[in-house]
Amino acid sequence: MNVETGIRWMELFNEKVQAEKDYLTQLDTPIGDSDHGNNMSRGMTHVIEAIETQKPDSLEELLKLITTNLLSKVGGASGPLYGSAFMGMLKAQKEDNIPWSAVIKSGLESIQKRGKAEAFDKTMIDVWIPVVEALENNQLTDAVIDQAVESTKPLKAKKGRASYVGERSIGHIDPGAYSSGLLFHAMLEAEAE
Ligand code: ADP
Ligand code: MG
Ligand code: MG
Image (cartoon, rainbow, N blue to C red; front, side, top):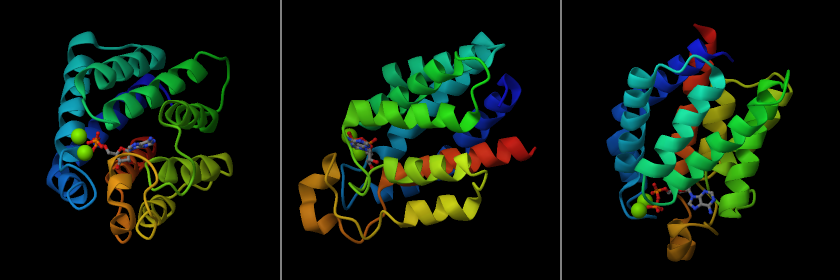
């Protein structure tokens, strides 16, 4: 990953978030408060604006800009959690010759530090965990990502708003898992260009 590919990654993620804004909100309706589409859309609009005005010329600068915008401009759980993810990635990226899988893993660790979720609690980390594992084995594909997103459907939520509906969270895809899926689909697309 370099800064050009990183910028492209964010552009593609933004496109997907805006295109699927209503679907993200729809997912957040039975098990949440119907704002995930708006939260992600607002956050990514700010990220793209900041990229255009600040023109980051290193991956570190880019990761810092993403972190700041997501932490300060997005309310709800997802802003601080995605913000923490990019902050964790930034921290790892500062080390020399660190593999990209370790950067993403550091993002996952930051989400967990902030949100205290474990695997199978039906959150975004149920996508991040298999993605990190696949990256470590050089086997990340769109199918792996889709499968991870889908795997949240039968789970009963243990964290976040979805946990308030208990058993009724079963049978629905987690909205944050879906948006994380978009993030990693965008990453694969940017890397392939
Ligand atoms: P809010 O729930 O505050 O309205 P969003 O709707 O934007 O915020 O985001 C909800 C998503 O955040 C969930 O679908 C889930 O993936 C994620 N989430 C919530 N709590 C946690 C947590 N403690 N750890 C990891 N992810 C979480
Ligand atoms: Mg919500
Ligand atoms: Mg909310």
